[in-house]
Image (cartoon, rainbow, N blue to C red; front, side, top):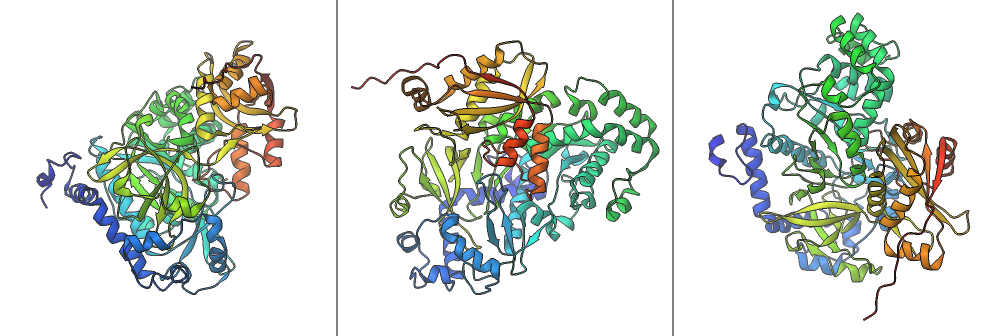
Length: 592
């Protein structure tokens, strides 16, 4: 197909013939979203008709939507856990999927407080690879010349574990990076990384990070984009550079490799890359020895066009710090995925982070949406009757995502709350709002992640000489009345006296009316407290989580903590404490 043949596509002119085919595929899928969804459901039900799970609902071979919706219940992980545990324990019968379970994909370990095992099948790798193959064709519509350089991406794996059945259990990104889809991927000039596979696939996080940073420094003029999976991962890389630039410069000056990097495959592959470069070493020393690290990304990698990181949801709080280190480079959020399923992509990846919307690709799974409101119906049967199909969602409304996958999840509640922002052809576009779980509660108040983040952002505007690098919280019920405690790590000079006390009050002003009523009218919540921790505390928190099995790729700082060792770590690093000195505003609504 000629490249010019889809120049009139709403997505824009493709960069090459390969891109043209990818963009045409997106158009075909989104133009026929409802019929694609109908076919996907029929395929899933037909292939899994003889599984223990579907047979228990007496579908009798039916593959239509009406029968599916009338007979299959909506479920959570807890509902499926006994079946998943049987698979993990070695039961090879067709329990959820007619295709053999190839491995388990683990959750991040910090999203829901426990690591979940998601059974998957081999062909899901093809489906994930398909979505990955669409990302650069879309990005090329907005940023030209990406085939003229490389991407500096900090990517990591985690050492997998095995279930009693012998099946591997590992994070979804580890599964992908260790697959042939990634390791033997064909050369693509638009997708060249500075990091060798050997560095990405090294299970030791220090050796992996050190090698990837070293390679990125050698290729500093070829780097056109810098990224990691999450914004926090990129900031961790910057912190690593702050701690290790002297040794990196020494290695570059001598053309040698740090003796702490002992992985044989890394040492072998680096013989092709290492070379003495005293001029580059002097440059790194000059830049990194300064106290001011503002714009360090563009100072070291001057041709960087954008940052490729997730900055939606809880990651949005990293935006000011990323702007500080990058000089305000655009931040591209390219795709929306989870361990359960890959969902869709951002068709306008260079938009402002606050405007990021993901277009659900209807071929990835069968999608339904539970209208989300504050008066949640806890009866799953009643709630299932309210589920809406992909093509029938309404702009402006919020929904909880429910999926049915080829791997055997049926009407499974993912737990993500999404807001419909528009449509691309027939396919809706969603803004990720939050995980549905409540973070903090002392009395009748319920504060979720989005509300807490909004309060932190509002309070941080009072800081003139510093900014909030990282935060977490917990509900302290040891005091009477209980109160919210928020841990802040700050970047920059210490604020003037009284500023942090005003920040406490400003956070309370940003809380919902139920919280403020409990504070003001009921007296059931005490003054909010900010505990400032010393620099590097959240790095230690992450290291602790990784030591307990969390994935370095998928790690997200928990916005609420309750695990005693974590609380003790945080409290041992506190350098100052501050309380709200006044009551927030609150008044009862008038009854009509």
